[in-house]
Image 1 (cartoon, helix red, strand yellow):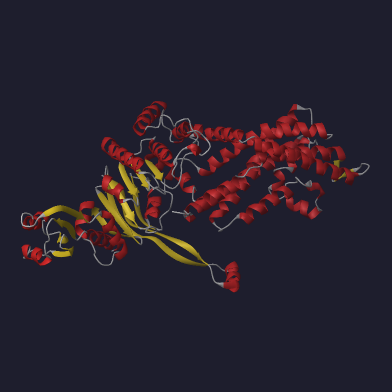
Image 2: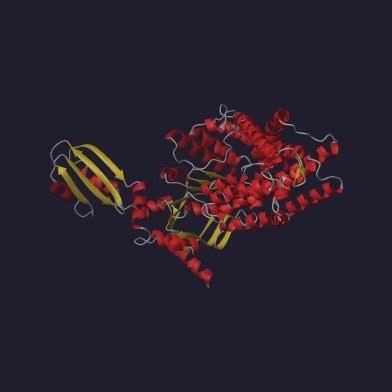
Length: 351
Length: 267
């Protein structure tokens, strides 16, 4: 069963146009002009139960707007939406009982009261029974090591401490679907990895479906089996992370250091027949670029044993580089199959 | 709507406790309100001169009316309009919408928590000070007190409804600061806080009869100072209940409409 189903989802906003000059300001006073801006343009995807899905894209690509529609905060302009069997914006109060949401940039705890009091209040808001609450809280507190923080007021917590408390606040009612909007923003590496571990465990133990937006691709690499990439309101990639790397990563680079001088021509001769490119700074160091189709070991085999090698370094294009190049090129150049499929679907439903 | 009553009650309790933590802020408030009563007291004393009656008020009734009106304001006043408009403008309204409760109900409850605090730590001590300083005559009949408390509660409801409506305007205009200031002046003036409505020019007093503001201060104050008695008290209460019900309509409509207008600023 799908936890989240989205079809042709669209959201447009009216943005006020400010005319220039004094005359323009006067005109604005009497007759406002608006621009229609589409933040999310007819996107479709499904997320099965128990999946952790990363939702990435540049700033302003429409990630947060999508999350806000999925959580019932915003009413979509058009399209179909089903989350956990509910249409979020229609039965908001009933629906939100089943989801958990963390906004990394906004606190959902009450600033002036103690952490534990916030949790108690949420218990009542979500109508969680006293026993369930206690069991769940103990589990979460132990897992996230919050014992010492419970009696402090929220305003006295550090960002890392607060974020762990935010997670507890979002999960106290044991939601089956969790939305995380930049949950690791601004956190140090230790807290980040703690939170990742925690999310992974939760997904494994409770089968929680997680949709996660982030700018930190290490979050995605650590957690997600699948990524949806958004650009300018449209989905430009939907599939596995490995596949994304394979599709967009163009090759690897191997750096050699030699004990005795080795000429570039010599190196090229050894690997003749393989479509690799050599470059050298001097006789003692050289780089070879190997396309994905060729095994690194094949190239190494040709060189190792013949040359006097003191050091080898294999550099794989990392996800950051890949994603950066996708963001920069936009959706235009390298269209993925996944994208074609979703576009076909959307065409079908229009018919 | 009421299935999570215990959570709603908790919002009253927590707001009360939060206010208690900042109670020092209100000591100056008591002083300012007493000062206000003093200023108006001496102004009216000068106007009355030797005696007589103005707009159906004797000088001593006017003093009591002043003290009661200002102290009632100490209870029913709140900043729900500002809180709501801030929530909307900085986008934290998003957090409110991911919870299984009604945002407006929560705001009303928080307002009531604040009201309770203001009643106990602002209105009652303020009244005691006013009574020491000025010749305020409070009624002795328990019915008058019971009636006044009920009416005071409706003053709070009507004033808070107006605040919620003003706050929700932030969905529709880019900056509703002006609305909020206007509302504040209009409520203070037209509710009869500054000048009792019976002293307004006839036509204006007639118009006031069709507006909700008189139900906030003027009518309850008139009952408490003994100007309205007997059956008239029920009449006043009827007007308050009517306005409470009538104001529910624009409030709910505005809230429904705003759900569609919502767009969350700042990510």
